[in-house]
Length: 79
Image (cartoon, rainbow, N blue to C red):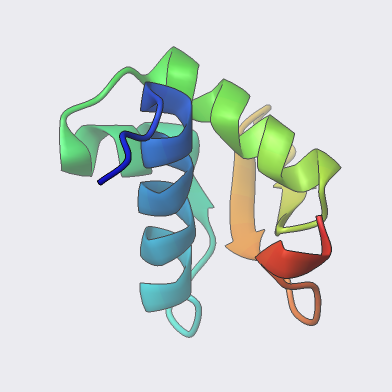
């Protein structure tokens, strides 16, 4: 058995959450972190890393809040 790092675990949580909520709305890092009881700051960093690899897409709102969606097309295998 292998052990995932905290960031890898949070990345999987984020991608799963975004996939489950894809049809309803984009989600903020705070929303995801609050639902799973984890650090919002670390979740934001994880989402930025996932966006860098095109696994999630960011949308910057006028209120300064960034919302996230799971990207279409690119799979984790292509990283």
